[in-house]
Structure formats: structure tokens, C-alpha cells
Image (tube, rainbow, N blue to C red; front, side):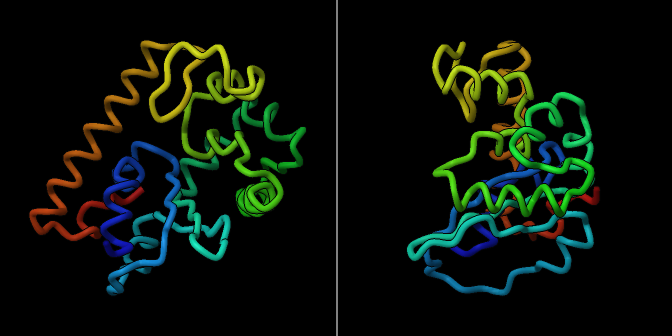
Length: 178
């Protein structure tokens, strides 16, 4: 699969503007194709490398405006500040997240960046991943009904985007301007 294939398959809700960010784990790509980075950046979608190890690369595919909005909330600040994040600066937060990925196996606060409900991120951290109500893309601790609706929306988006892309729609057309 190409980078573009993987981006559509795993980041459709972010392409659609429904989600602030997505994680993309890349193994060495078997197919190298041109990637329309500049066209996506013009639509407000950026890629930030989080971690490189010999066998894979972890990328954060994100929308700055959405992420800044989330990071400015009091609840996000209350979770991130004790972990050394300066929530007043997106680049500083992204740099700190990269540092945390280098020192932690998987820093759980990444859920904030990925647009997971803040109550669920806090619940995961406080419960050390236990005592959750249900598990989908993330473990739900707070509002189960709301989380199921959000998960449904993201899942449907992924199916619709993959179908459109598979039928020839270019990624630049799938990425909304935000």
C-alpha cells in the first residue's frame, strides 16, 4: 500500500474534518508514489512525525485549528499541564508529545490529540486502562451513548471515504478545507 492509501484508510475522519488528528503507523512502504503533501496542507491537514524506530514510523496526521481548540479547553490543560505541555502553543505541544513518545511506550494523553472525549482520556489515565464501560477505538469511561455515536460516525466516514477513494476519487478531493 502507498502512503496515500494508508492515509485514506486510517485517517478518513481527519480528512473529513470530523476528527482533530489520527495516528498512522508506517512499516516500510512497498509502493512508493507521489504524495500530495502541499495540496493537503493547503486544505489545513498536516503531518507530524512522532517516533521513528528501525522497523516503523509513527505519524500524527492533524488539523491545527481543531487541535488548538481542543488544547485550549480547561479540561485538556488540566490533564496536559502536569505532564509538561504548554497548551498555549500548538508547536510546543506537538514537540512535547514527540518527546513523550520517545520516553514512554505509548503516552496515554495522545487521546486528547486524537479527539477522544476528554472524560475518557482522564478516565483511562486515572484507571490505568481498567474499569471502562466499553472499548472501541478507545476505552470509554464517561458518556457511553455519546461515545458510541462518535465511534459510529467515524466508522461510517472511513467506509465512505475508502469506497470513494477505491473508485478513483483523489485524496485531495476527499480532504475538506478546514
